[in-house]
Every structure is written in structure tokens, then in C-alpha cells.
Image (cartoon, rainbow, N blue to C red; front, side, top):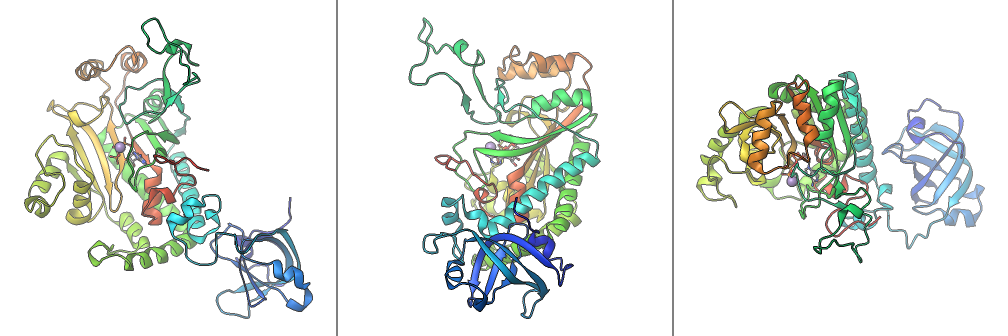
Length: 478
Ligand code: ATP
Ligand code: MN
């Protein structure tokens, strides 16, 4: 292990006059004298001042962007503007050279598209490293919230054989030789010869398994990767994304919505405090970005104001019925501006409709509840009107749907009827039915797409830039 302090610790400025060691990568080397050193611990660089005369010419020549170094020196108050302290270098070792011509991360602005091709080096840029530190902080805040609220963290399986949920297309998991599949007499693939003796796939959600654990532990959450083989090449969809799914016994839909609001506010506030420097940087980036957009597409609030707005304003809660009425009477609908016209009660809302409600009509996050049962999943609790289910979606500005949740159907006969209506095989879900047979209780939960939350907080427009290694149709490099 190399000895050394983190730059984040050094920049707290408490060790003026002290000798110290530090390691990192050279961001820039200017005037043959000033190294901007970064080690990933903070958005800020440590200015290291090298006295040209003191070092060998050859050594000085090899200091270029991308080189990794170990330096030893004295921390002094900085002579220049722009930083409070700097390191007067006394010893300098190059740990790893770098070819200054070939190194792709030059000290200039790179497009995010370009950086996606260099996913192994893009973490050395200010933007991506700031995003990833914020991402890490958000994850920590989420665990902290649930811990404070007495939730248990459970790990639901990634490989599963249950495919009843219908949440999206599945990635098949198999050890069968796809070039030479075993067939039965009827010429159908013999899945009994597969690893698990039946068809399996990567999970699209940990909810059903989380329900099992909630009905014994009370309040639980999962936070893990989920997989959808949907061919949606949008800035909001990944084939592999992380989802946070709490499940609470004795919660009805209203308590579920109350929790999601409290949860989102708490983690945003915590992250705003703990990731202040990175968010300040991303805020400046966001504001610059806005200037390059046409007037009508610009956000009225800057990034930090947008987060603070969420902290200060309750979400708007409207029923699906109200949402449809608002959309029917809306200008874009009457002027036939929507790609998908509003056809009335029963229709599924498209993201253009959701964005209208959030960004134009209410100008704040919106929770829509009580959806028609036919556009929602089988496990959602039937309301007494016989037409709607106790579902809720949370819609965010710039992102659209960020959370989907519901109160679950806890009444065995209702669940059986619904599954029959939808042609879902009760044999497959026998265990799910048994939970309703042995000590059933009202319970609720939701799923929050982690990357969409990171997008909202960091202001990144493409979801591929908020996950270290994005998986999208046609792309699984790195
Ligand atoms: P959408 O309509 O945006 O595709 P969905 O209705 O398929 O979302 P759910 O099945 O309710 O979404 O999943 C819960 C949450 O997971 C969503 O609210 C969203 O935040 C997130 N999510 C869903 N699909 C994706 C995806 N492909 N990539 C990233 N996040 C996703
Ligand atoms: Mn979807």
C-alpha cells in the first residue's frame, strides 16, 4: 500500500506547514511548475508546485495529463488565487507513465457520447467522477433512511423462475448449448435438462419475494439490479438498472404515498448536504447546458433549486380520473399536439402526457393514483368501484415516471379471480397465494428506479451517464 492522505482530507486545510504524502493522477501540468492533482476523493484538485531546477529534466518531461504520481512535500498557504493551500513538492515519483498523445482524456471538454466509448477512462473526468460520487452518496442515504425507519435490507434473487409479473421482456438464463439444444419427442426444447430443470431468467423486480419477507419481518426493502430486455433506446431506459423496492405490512395506499414522499425528500436533503461540492459543480454544468437549449426547453430552476423545490413543496396527488380530465381539457390535446390523443378513461398515459402534467400543468412532482385495473399488474388491490386498483405512480420533472407502487391484493378470493381473468397460472404462484391463506395482512410497496433518481439529482440527461457500465440494446462493452 502506498502511504498518503486523501486530497479531500488535505484540502480541509488543517495541516498547513506539515510534511505529507499524496497519490493521484495529473490532470494538468502548466508552466512547468503547477500540477493539478486529483485522486478521485473530491472534485477539487490539489495544486502541487514543483521547482523545475530541483528535478531532473527527464522527469519533468514525463509529467503529462493522465500520469499517476506519488508526491511528498510541505503543505503551504497558496500564493495564487483559486486555492487556499498548495503542496510544495520535495519528492516526486512517477507511478505510471502515460502517452500524452494517445491519452483520450485531454484537459478540454469532451462530449458525453465520446466518453461513453471510453468507459474505462471516463471516470477520470470531473463530470463523471462527480456523478459517481453523488450516486454513491445517494445509495448510502437510501440505506440510512431505511435503517432509521426500522426496515430490514433483504437480498432477493437475481435468477428466478417466476415470470408472472409481466413487467417487461426477460433475459433467459440457461446452461443449455444453444447450438445444440436437447429436444423432446415433440421437437420442443427439453427444459428439464437445463441447469435448474425449468426455464429461468434474470429478475425484472424483487417485489414478489420482498412481499414474502415483509409478511414476517414487517418492513423490508431490496436494492439490487433488475433486468429488462425491452428494446427501448431512450435516455431513460437501461437493460440493467438498479431498483429500490420497499415493502411494508399494515400500510395502505395513502401511507405508501406518504412514505415515498418522505423518503424522496429525506434522501435528497441528505445528499444535498453530503455531496455539496459535487452538486455545486454539477449545478454550474447544468446551467451552462441550459444556455445551449432553445428558450422554451430551458429549465426555470437551476439544478440545486430544482432539488430544493422538491424539499419545500408537497407532491400534487391526483386520481387517474382527474389526470384524464385535465389532459382532455389541455391545450395540446385540443390543438391535437399530442402524438397519442387523449381517448378517455382506460387509456395508458404516455410520457408526453405525464410530462405535460408535471412540467406544464402543476409544475411540481405529481402522484397519480387509482388507475384502471386493466393497465396495471395483477397483484394490485382492487378498489371497491370494481374498476380501479390502488396503484400509484410518481412523476418527476424532466424524468417522467420515477416510482411505481401499489397496495397489494391481500384477499385470496380477489387475487384468484384477477389471476383467472388475466390467465395467470395459479400453479406457478402457489406460494404467493399461500401468503394470502396463512395470516394475510394489508401491505404496500413501491419501486424506485435508482438511475432515474441519479439523473434527477445530477441533471444528466442521458441515463447511460449515471451508471458506471450501461447496458443497452446492442451494447454490453466493458
Ligand atoms: P416506464 O414506463 O418508464 O418504462 P415502467 O412502468 O416499466 O416504467 P415499473 O415496472 O413500474 O416501470 O418499474 C419501476 C421503476 O423502475 C420505474 O418507475 C422507473 O423509475 C424504473 N425503470 C423501469 N424501467 C426502467 C429501465 N428500463 N431503465 C431504468 N429504469 C427503469
Ligand atoms: Mn417500461
